[in-house]
Amino acid sequence: MSSILGIPLEYLLVILQKNNMMVSWTHFYEASLKHKWKYKTTRERVSTAVGDIYGPQYRDEVIKRLDWYSDRYQKLNSL
Image (cartoon, rainbow, N blue to C red; front, side):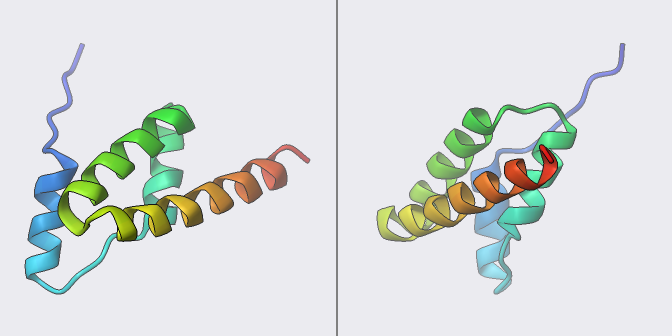
């Protein structure tokens, strides 16, 4: 059985921020689904990391948009 190594999302956000780059949260969400994450897990990890790095106002906006995208994504894929 192979193991997968990862780095904390917070660390990646700091690196991206220092390089004037941003995460595509829709792509992150879709990748999380491919790796069998439940939406609750994805939402919690994004919320924690974004809140720690960018603050609560930015986190709330990211989560609001992620919730919207997730809802639409699930509806479209259940047809």
